[in-house]
Length: 166
Image (cartoon, rainbow, N blue to C red; front, side, top):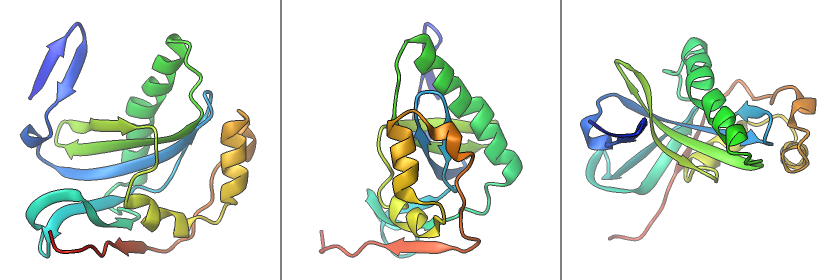
């Protein structure tokens, strides 16, 4: 369900059905470069059981996000985000994290964060072939377009969180 208010919507996660996916990116105010899609697992116990947590582990890339779906996410979610920032005269430089639900009606935004995802980052960064420092410096100085695109290893990565009981 969504609650409408002058064109704005609040998406309530518990009413949506589908796969959750995390899309992280770098943004320099003009250009957005995406990281591979990842998926975290929030339940405290094996088999996706138990209470929700901040994230008990993650893997990347989330292969159910096809190149076509990634293009849809880019054009229908990240491009309008960048246009909205520009319209508000906001020059945002940094990490951007979108938590999405892939519903039968298309991807829906659950949350945006001005940070990398945790624990998704721990699964994604080891896949990076590009120089992370160069990418972050280009982000900070508004020169992300000069990188062209980020290069990733053709591998998979996983992160498992170890925590104390409770």
